[in-house]
Every structure is written in structure tokens, then in C-alpha cells.
Length: 461
Image (cartoon, rainbow, N blue to C red; front, side, top):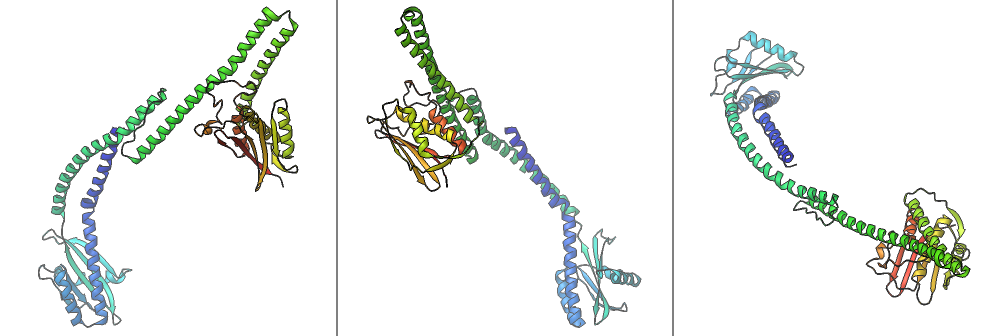
């Protein structure tokens, strides 16, 4: 990368030097000639305006001032070809005096026939090898044609160009040398932080999550380093969650399998001929199989929701009816339910999937219910939506971990104490369903006071 930066910097320097060469050397001649011709034409225009408004004496005075500053000579001819005025600069011989009358008449005809009534000619005077610029224009004075002719030497720039070439060559050598050194230093300085980031990224790709990305003094590189450091932190969190996931799943699968094996061996060796004891052992085995079945079903359900391979089928239904049918599933538990819901309140949602959300909220509350064994369920209208809440008076959730409770298998108890009716995926399923259906969901909790889980659905008209 350092070589590419160095190369592009030198390439840019070379392009700039080439541009300066073309501007100073190649274009200086045409630019000078064009500028000189424009100046002469402007002076002729001044004389032409004076001829239209003044007599020849005023024209002679104004022309004299022009000749004092401009290196040229001027001749004015009337309509019959008689020269009425000639002005010369004392520092140069006037080449107009050397032109034959026949030649001047040809120039008059050329001016008359030109669409712009003027023309110009560049030629060499043949004496001093000096370029000359000849300009002629026809103009009407009092309805009669008059002709203005100007001749001016154009300095040959060969010697000037030669000097410029030598100076430019030395300048280019110095600039290119300095550019090479500066490009080398810049390439090293610019590529160094990127090289460090690349090396750190390779370590990260190899699984080293302890790497740190340094951005140095460049804002863009610093932003990139900050982004990569953030990504590394997320990788660390993901790795920790992965470890928790493996530990939880292993625990939740290994425990029932161990118990199933143990009780099966007890039936085989001890209670096989004792119907009452055998029935107890078989009941334990069935409970553990049911737990495994719930775990597998929840894993499949969560995978289906996260893969978005299901349809949302919205219907209108009574909210109170769904609350009662869901709480009915927990009648076997020693719980009290306090329900606040308008009997006529109807919502629009996928009844089955939002019923699963409500079930998981209540099931989660049963694990952390307070000493009063009370779970409060509310359905309150807020604008066009109905907000459903499930509240317990349990231990609450610490602010440090409240953002992680929606993660798969995340448990407040890091000792992996298994719940007989929970797979550890309930809140993850809630998150997946609400994300897919566009429903809002959130939690509010205070340590020692309890927790409230919320979700919203659209209110039916």
C-alpha cells in the first residue's frame, strides 16, 4: 500500500509539471500573439470611433498618444485610396511605407469583402527575422469608406522559451526530488495505521478477541478503528453468549437425559416388580421427556420466527377472551391473577402468535413471582393501540443485564438452575414474533419491587 501511495503522489506531481510545461512553454507563443492582436484591434476601434465623431486633427492627437505606448505604426486611407494619415513610433521603422499602392488596394478590397470588414496577416519582415502582425479594417465615415491599417512587430520568443525551458528543467528536477521524499514520508505515515489495523484484523479473524485497533491522528482511520473496536466488543459479547448458549443447552439436555437414564435403570433393577414405585419412576421419566419436547419445540419455533418463514394472519378478537384463555393454562399453579381489561375491547393481530407472546410473559412471571403470588395483567388503550402488560412483584432485574434478557438462553442465574416448565427461549420468541409483526415490546423493572413486561397491538375500530 505504501508503494501505491508513493506512486500516485509522484504521478500527480508529474501531471502537474506537465500541465505547467504546456501552460508556460507550449502555449506562451499562441497566447502572446492572440493577446497582441486583441490589443491592436482594440486600439483600431478607438481610432474608428474618433473618425466617426471628430476631424483628422483630433484623430492625429489621439493616435499619437496610442503610438507613444504601443509598438506599432498606423495608416488611414480615404475612399479613393489616398493616405490621409500616417503615424509612426520613432523606435521602429514603419513597414507600411514599404508597401506598394497596388498592394494597399488589394488590402482594401480584402477588408471590403470580409464579412467582418477586417482581416489580419502574420508574416516575417525578412530583414531582422522578426514576426510582423498586419491588421486592416474598413469603416464608413460620413457614408464613405475609409481604411485603417496597422502593422506591429511580434517579438520572437525563441530565446525566452529557451530560458524558460532551462529554468523549468531545473525546477522540475527540484520539485520531483522533493516530491519523492515527501511522498515516501507520507506513504509511510498514511499506510502505517492501516497496516496496524490490517494486522489486528488478521488476529481477530484467527479468533484473538483481545486485539485493539489504533487509528492514530487521521479522522477517517480513527473512525474505522473505532468501528472495528466496537465490532470486536460485539464479537466478545457474541462469544460470551455462545458459551452461555452451549452451557445452557448442554445443561437443559444433559439433566433430563441423566434422569431418564437413572430412573430407567431403577425400573430395570429395583421397581420393575413394584407397580407403585414403578409408576412413580415412569412419571419422572415422562416429565423429563416432556421437558425435552418443550425445549426442542421452542428451538424449532424460534428458528422459524428468526428465519421469517411464517405468515402473519391478522384478525379481530376480544382481548379479555385471550387473557382468560391464557391464564386458564396456569390454574394448576398456586397463583392469583388480577386482570384489568374492558370486556368489549377488540384488537387486530395474529391471535395465535400474540397469544404465544402473552403466554411467555405470564410463564416468565411465574418463575419470579413475589411472595404474594400475584400476577397483574392489564390491557389499556393508548391512541390507536392497546398496550398489554404483565407485572409481578418479584426480585426485579438489574439495569446491567436488562438489555440482554431478550437474548437466547440468557438467564439471570448464571448457575444454570433449570426450570421444569421453561426452555429459556420464551423472551427470545417474544422478540422474534414482535419484530416480525411490527409490535413494540419493552420491559420496566426495579430491583426488589418487581418487573412489568409490555407489548402493543392495534386497536380495532
